[in-house]
Image 1 (cartoon, rainbow, N blue to C red):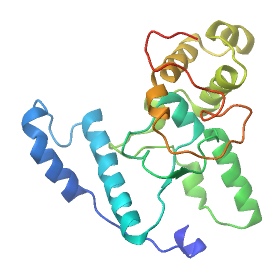
Image 2: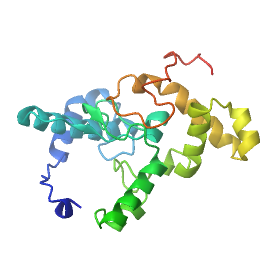
Image 3: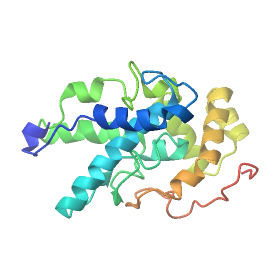
Image 4: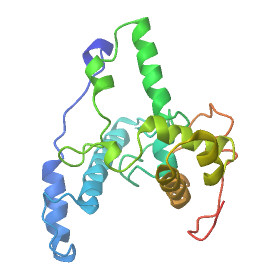
Length: 212
């Protein structure tokens, strides 16, 4: 895709930096092995990536674009100071399913995005074989729930009764939406394309006991 768009890119290995940080904090990580499938180490990888990107941006007087979409913001499926780094979030109000639709539409204008990028399972690429659906409901279901809750102010019971979606997936999404507000407060700003984005019209208290 970079070749198609004639975009310059560099490859910067994160392993040496990741290993150095791991070695420095290993005594207080309670014997977590460096190749363990552990969220602490997964997030460490994302934060190393963020440090590299910000360093390049500083040097080049450039702006890092945050890659998060609305589905990830809603569920907190992102790493503070990791993949959330950046000064502007281009697709922050775009649900994941719409991201795919836009990608497919773009290819109708000219072949730009390789089909394998669109077809492969979404992954944070922080652990071997990791895919987003290990942690989240399928995006086509997740985005329906997010739209019902965020855009249309529906409760879990209303969504369950009206949509026929699984109660477990609805409750899980509702919980993630509630506990992820603190991340959204620290996210890069971006454009609003829906009736209600997380930057305008959606501000809830940052407390786990708050209910809506």
